[in-house]
Image (cartoon, chains in turn purple, blue):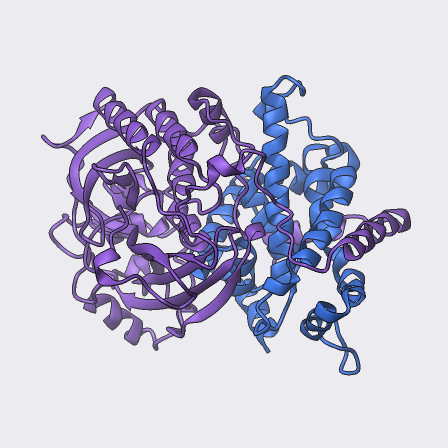
Length: 392
Length: 208
């Protein structure tokens, strides 16, 4: 059997030392002490002393939030087998670089600073419902398409024509959407429940044909069956230690804690992730996130765009490796409505985080995330009344 | 599958029993402390790993009511807590550095006793991997070590990371690309397809 990089990591992992006996003794005593003091649920990752000021929260399922970061942006069009995605312009009258984007972000910062996001009271939950999808390219074995597939042989088409995954050089490559429908109910202590439904659909009928011709290999993606999980405070990122000074916050986002260090696109994505953070994200912190984003070079104001759920908002984008990450911001509240990733230049997407960006027509949205409903509810599993379904 | 023989209670049963008898949680500690410690030690060194591993089990004990009893395996839940603590630890490091308490740059992160940043503690091929791991980002490194330290499949790793299986697969693919690039052009490593097959093969084994 050949050695690959994961085998080497396994060797490195196995080379690690066993914990010495005294280390285990100390850890066991620490646990015993915790057992002695409380048998109750104690959120050990706690809010700071300013908890009262941090009561305003936006609750979004962490799974979806993280997926949105991976997406680095995404977009708003039909996830149907006949769709094949939609296009966004890479340049044009609606797109303004630099200062206008910063102006829009600063405006959002002011709006969220004054926002009054609903807070669950005793016995209440904040319900959030989101949809998201990422386009993946799979080969005939059902694995992610290897990076050495020649993009030009797959992508050599205009934005108006679908690629031909049957191209011999590409192997039997087909594309599917990995979709997630998420509902979460979170109380004021960050405990609650989530219900996730993963599903899969083909990017186009052509992709389904390729899959069938390859023997209908298992795609190892969704089952379609909902799964339920408990949520707890420790499941959420702890943002209480992050600075609210925009400059300091940006330095933290560029430090390597959120991805590659000193990469503006990583910092921009981290802003999107943290804006979806369900735990203790105060209005002041959300405002600081937008202000930090305004300091990131290369952002673009995209004008009014719609997220996948059809919600209109101000689009702010940043392009890296041929893929533009986009934030869609509610113009009236400053809240994040959705994120999108658009493959603007597939030929430049060899290092793109979303590898399917190499195998779609230019302008195709390859990942998206949208809030579709939110509100305060009285119990887990209940949903807001239709009239309260706005997330603004 | 979770380290228990037929005659021993499963981790899930132990957790359930610990709700009434907290001392039972010690069984979970005895079964899994070593693997959690080793996972952490490879990333932050022995001193920080001791603290983070101990805290992982203290948090897990406090949060044991929130474990979904329908899950078969507690390890993704345990490692998920460890990863959250690891992230917070790193953020605290960054904050301390910003405050001038540490003299370090991103290129020379002075994390004490950090194996991936201190090739003096490892040798040969392992040192080569350590150096490559040191040059990729923290999240990618944690995912690679999670998969390498455990026999988790994509779904289990996703549970630990609190992200979807699809996102996990994308992130793992990206991490492996980064590591492969850092390991250099002399690469005698296999292609992505066979690597993925290895993971899936183990995944299938785990799901049995």
